[in-house]
Amino acid sequence: MQNAKIRLASRIALLVFICAASSNAQSTRPDAEKQLAHDIYKQFIEIQSGFTTGSTTPVAEAAAARLKAAGFSGSDIFVGGAIPKKANLVVRYHGTGARKPILLLAHIDVVEAKREDWSTDPFQFLEKDGFFYGRGTGDDKAQAAVWIANLIQYKTEGFKPDRDIIVALTADEEGGGPYNGVDWLLKNHRDLIEAELALNEGGWGEESKGKKISNDLQVSEKYVLNFRFEVRNKGGHSSMPVHDNAIYHLAGALARLGDFGFPLKTNEVTAAYFEQMSKIEAGPLTDDLSKVASGSEGSMERVAAASPAWNSTLRTTCVATMLEGGHAINALPQLAAATVNCRVLPEDAPEYVLSTLQKVVADDQVSVKQLSEFSKAAASPMRPDLLKAVSDITTRTWPGVPTVPIMVMGATDGRYLRAAGIPTYGVQGFFMDRDDIRFHGRDERLGVESFYEGQAFLYELVKRLSTSAR
Image (cartoon, rainbow, N blue to C red; front, side):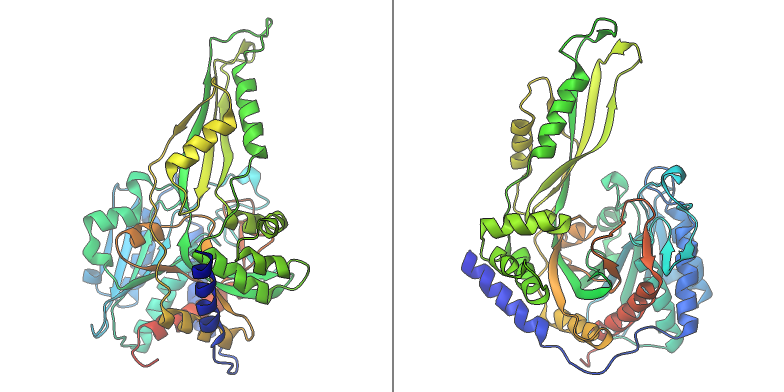
């Protein structure tokens, strides 16, 4: 297996660094195109589409209105979903049909955000200090806005691709479940999104201290499992406390979880990633990054300790995200419970995760129950044409910045498409400070220049992948 990992790393290295060292491409689009992308971005951000409190339907309808105003036929635009609040948009831009379509995917739901937690209104699109602020600026309405703006530009230009270009803006990526847009479309309207390959979120540009490091291309991802830790007992009057307290049992279990780490390891994709990072990174960890690819436990421990992102790349992780407990301020709790969110390496089975958590909890008063079904899929094949296209455009736009295939630490809707036989790749061209990623957190933001550079990058990439002449 280690030899296979090293061979894969070598193949990727050759592809990554065979890139045209030509002069700078235009790093942003003309002002009118930038303005259109900005206006769509702002409109999307200011529609409250939180997973539980909002609705994706107004976003889908706003996108449809923009497309119709730009001359797209109503017969090429679909708006619909599992329930009225959870609509998706699918639009088709017709090519010659010489090749199967390409699918451009982005989700339009967002993680919930409370005004009292933020420095600004999370559902007000605000430009400040070189950043766009608002819930969804990074995850994932920037890409949604760019797909729509660029599609309109292709129509304005009269661009005739060799394949149809399909854009799908979908619901409930953040929560999954019965209303997930990609899952629903595959089950109910697969013909609308059938494609040779798909581009999605999950890969972005890494930068640190203002220096661009790599433009990451996601080819695989973790999958999600949610568990409930629960303690129930008879309770009682708070004036007569006992050791058998539901909250204390739960607290002990969570403390043990916090001190626990799943085993560190690599797979083919992550071994190749760390091999490439060893050629890019400077400093004391360079040697360790190279040794991670060959399975050095000591190197993996040091690399994992240096970065939360690298730690999550090297192991399955489980973390408590929500708490509940007690029923009165003057009563011993009869219930204490926590939700534990796990991001699981593709090679780790759900049964393994459950049995490991039960051992970590080490308390028969704490039950551990799996809450969610899981969905995972094999990595997408590393297409030389795709990697070369991403590499060429990256090098022209940001000279000296390599393209690096990755396994994303989170999970995306790409897993549904991969499982359905549609290879999916995460790529955006939006560069973000890897030490200050604000997805799902307070004051989410994306750099202004990064947004416009990503717009230009994706414009060129889709054109390249939709035209026979390479």
